[in-house]
Length: 454
Image (cartoon, rainbow, N blue to C red):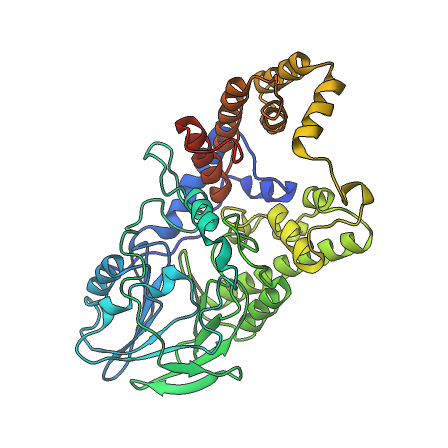
């Protein structure tokens, strides 16, 4: 089955990306997320006479390049179950054996299903010499990262609560995570590699971005560029709220600009639908690179002007001419999150203001806020009033103060926080934000979170 690749306009709502936040009316948020589903509807896209991309079989894409005596597989999904379904779909187009597998980077949703593509003969498996560095070296915090990963992707949300993951469907088969992983056997040097596999001319180009170990693939005869996760149809996830080491934003922008120089006829993203046509594909890459660089440059200027990350997160916006681009809507990454990540990545946590050098302990600050409000009862009334006015963010912040007070109504504060989180979630078109709000609300309601986490 060939799939028609579509570019869609979200009813003029793309301008919402300009406001630096991702909150809109609930009906609008849901329509936007539902429209984004088109980007990962399951099927095979024929992007060239001998190149096929499987979309929607898991969160990421996998591609097959057909050569003279075999095929090349680029990325292998999350586990063997989803990979086997994609491999079966590929067989409509070629029964030739797999001669090589390519990992564009080491995120689990791109490497976990390799065994499903392999027969009796083990193929060469290509990866960069930095392969495995996708998550940095922060293994010590893996326990909490796993919890936050579940929230970001909404893995435990009920079907009525689920929409999608921004660049992937909500419901994927995840229980066999990584069970089909096969280690690389061929290292791509920093200088890149040009070779021929199964009669196919193929080029491997180093391109750090979402990960330090990333590369992109260029097929010079077919004019097809496989971007890995340095491009997909959403503003990029320059920071993941599940928790990641700093992603080198400047390098990411430069890598995408390098891709644009090839002027591909087809751009195959790591997630979402391929973009076909030289003008459209090249423009998308140029815009993407510019968007990343603009957020970086604006943040750096603000830093050097002495502005705090909180201030900058509300001030930095995409350039006006990029605000109507459907592949830059903040379905997955967000500008405010990116700004904060850039700030912390370049300067660390301290914003330079001596007021924030040694802030008050949360419990003491809550007590002083209550005194300022006229007592715990008055603060509680303000919390309830904020919720009634649907001022959900303020209700959340006040609930966090009330719960620290010895004479505060912790049960009520928890209830207010749950309701406010769901109110925010309903208005979110940024999928990770939406999923995180709902997941956290469910955990609070079930009592799975301790008072510390609450």
